[in-house]
Length: 317
Image: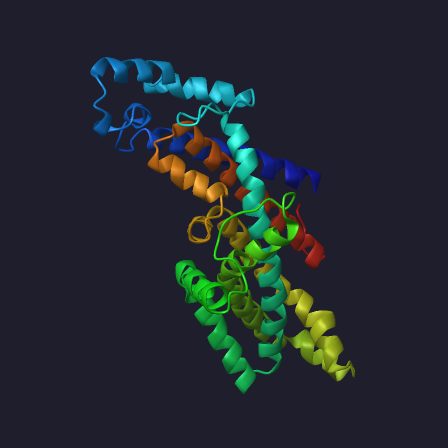
């Protein structure tokens, strides 16, 4: 196990380095000049001298390879740089935004799991019935429904029509806990819709595959109750593809919540990334991508290690 974790960590470091290197060079290919953004754009009529001074202050006048080496050396010292726009350390902005994204991403994944697995099991054990048809249709619809559609529908129903929840905005739980709870409901549900549909679909398919195997027939022939066969044997063996899909969805929910954060005006890490791209704020883009990449890698590592807990037959040798 320790050797396997060590190998995966080495792979993680190399993957992170490759991602950061690609992002570093790609952001410099973005159209637009950060110096113009800082000086107020073309409407501000900045002079060539002003642009030169700002670029010099930001270090953008240096050769690209020199900038790359400087960035990597600073990164090794834990320095993510300073935002071109706000002037604050990038680590400060990210540390403020990441918990806000987790406040809706984690409940969304828990909700998707709590809904998807039981319904998937129920559909598989009632194959061909009306319940199976309804759950299968719901899962396909949920997985196919874009977040901006489900989010706007929830706002129209629960905020505008029923007036049960606020339509958006953020309140820190330390300032108003009940206000915070009322504001995370709609974005959490919106984020949970697609993962819940995928988990339902994967759970049903995996369960049906396991139910056709010989060990199920053997367990039934020994006189085990159907409930013991389903929940004691089939369910556990069916979880590996579901765990894999959940691991992927966890990364996508964390990194891809930009639409949901914009619909509900939620100041998370995805909206920070979008704003930094629009502002050509290179250090914030690179720092945010670093956090997203590390999150994906850690989730994949945890998912990989979870396989051994679900199925003891899996070896890491």
